[in-house]
Image 1 (cartoon, rainbow, N blue to C red):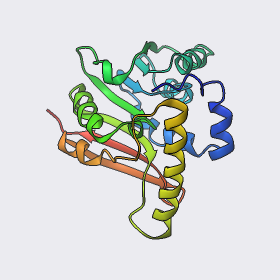
Image 2 (cartoon, rainbow, N blue to C red; image 1 turned 180 degrees about the vertical axis):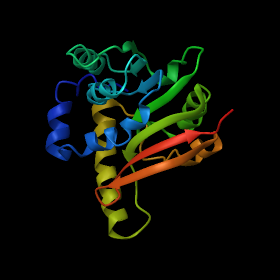
Image 3 (tube, rainbow, N blue to C red; image 1 turned 120 degrees about the vertical axis):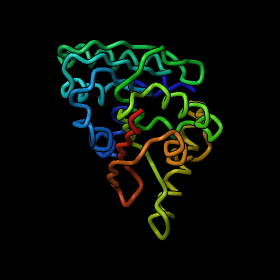
Image 4 (cartoon, one colour; image 1 turned 30 degrees about the vertical axis):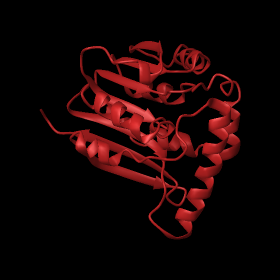
Length: 214
C-alpha cells in the first residue's frame, strides 16, 4: 500500500470531494490532547492534523508514522512552517504492518482515516499492539467512515464506501476491500468510548476513546 502517487493531488481531491468535512472530523477532539507529553500519530498523510496538534500541545514529543514518503515529506514541511512550537517531532517512514512502536508508553494515539485501510485480520494485530503502548487513562483519537445502522443513510454510505474502496485499491493497493469497524477490538483492549460525533448523515464519525487506569 502506498499513497505516494496521490500525495501531490490529495489536498485538492479532498477539498473537491469533501471540502473541510474530513478536517473537521480530524480536529474534533484535538483539545483533549492538551497537557499530554507523548503522542503517536499513524497514517498522518500530508500533515494537516499535525499542524493543528502542535498548536494545542506545548513541549510534547510527537511521533508521526506514515508508509508514504511523499506524504511524510508534506507533513514535515507543514510542521516546519512555524507550527511546531516547542514540540519535538519525529518522522518515521514505515508500514505499520512491519513496524513496532519502541519501548515506552504514549499518552495518546491518533489514527485518523487510517484503520479503514486494513483487513479484519490485520486490525486484529494492529489494535492490540497499539493498545499496549498507551498509558493508563490515555487517549485514542479516531476519525473515520462508518455505515449507519439502517435506512437510506446506510444505503448511501454503502454506495460511497464501495466506490471509495474500489478507487483506493487501484490507486494505492489498499489491503482492505471493505470497512471493518474497530470498536469491538478497542473494547476488548480495555478502552471505553468517551465521545463520538457523527457527520454527513452518519457517514463520518470522530471518536475519543480512553483506556482504563492500570
